[in-house]
Figure 1 (cartoon, rainbow, N blue to C red):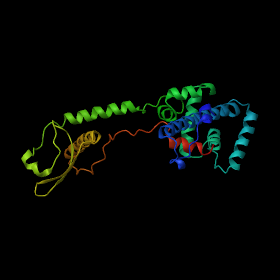
Figure 2 (cartoon, rainbow, N blue to C red):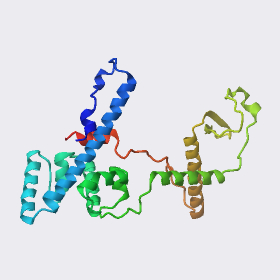
Figure 3 (spheres, rainbow, N blue to C red):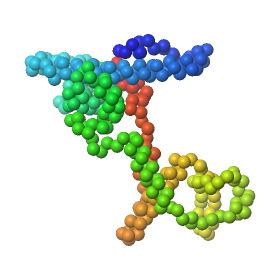
Figure 4 (tube, rainbow, N blue to C red):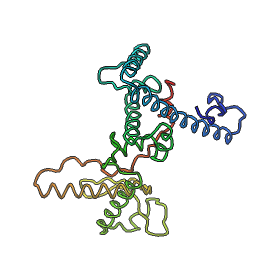
Length: 274
């Protein structure tokens, strides 16, 4: 366990009305998060080292004895295993978590570390430099090779920006113009220069259009461009094939989810069994 974890001031959230200043509370929470984060990585390092010492590098006879001990420990804790459950899975379930998803993620990290011949002493530094548990899980295959399908967050952002720029270039022409006098009674906020919005409109059978409101969110505007490009592509494909257009698919370029490598919820779940 790290010194940071042991020295962390404990603040009970149920006592949030206490006179402790908010800034101090935030600092304490950040310290606790860092401590929990480090403690998890240190525990994983120790599991990795234990597996190497008692299973991988043990003499055959000793290895079988240790496997029997693992099985008995799992049985005592009522942890379900079968013939396909590896020794690493058993160790992770015993020490850290029985969550199948988290267990598989941790075992994948161990497999990569072993494939890259990382020693327990090198584990923490390697894991940090590699970007953390989630980064290793996504970036590397179990044999230590780089996952060719892996796309970093920065690359996803650039790909999306390029697609938005392309969609904007393809939509230069104005379909129609509504003169200002026609909107005089709409009570719209004035603008100093041409400004893009996403309009919430209703097209009526008689050809008229009801404008219900405008949204100025840049991310929504970018998504609208991408949606328009996707619909036009699908419409073109449908017109060419002569088949009815399918229901418009959701944009394939939604803003990338920003999932922390190890967010607080994941770490909390993982530490429950400690």
